[in-house]
Amino acid sequence: MELIYKHEDLIDIFNDISPFNMKRDIKYINKKKISIDKILQEIEAKLISQNYDVEYEKEFCNEINNKIVLVKVRIINPQNNKGESSGFRVVGIVNECDDYAIIFNLFPKDGSKRKDNLTNEELEKAKHLLCEYLES
Image (cartoon, rainbow, N blue to C red; front, side, top):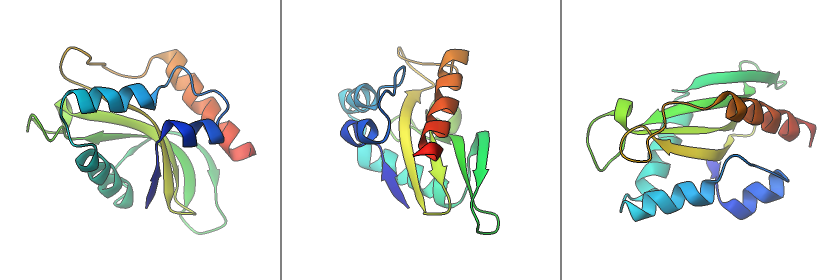
């Protein structure tokens, strides 16, 4: 599965991804000396096995049981070995029809920059991004 997460690519897909900032999210991971490659491998494994929570479902493809959805993925923090509950949350759009995902938010569940969940504003923006993606 291909993962799209770089700031430039996100801007090409969406005109405005605020309040999300993957550039900042990746900078935080690098600052904590966590391997972005390990994080991406974990995300990819979860997406391939469809081990994610569907936050919003908007469109089915023509193929059976494939869809395009807004998801939240729980992944471990390879640095702290505490499991998924204190790892990271990833928010993005999964296109099961074409086998790729667009990741636009990655936040820690532990530490000084911890975040419990998406705010209502962020969830609404994420839904809007899914609709914008489907219209393009």
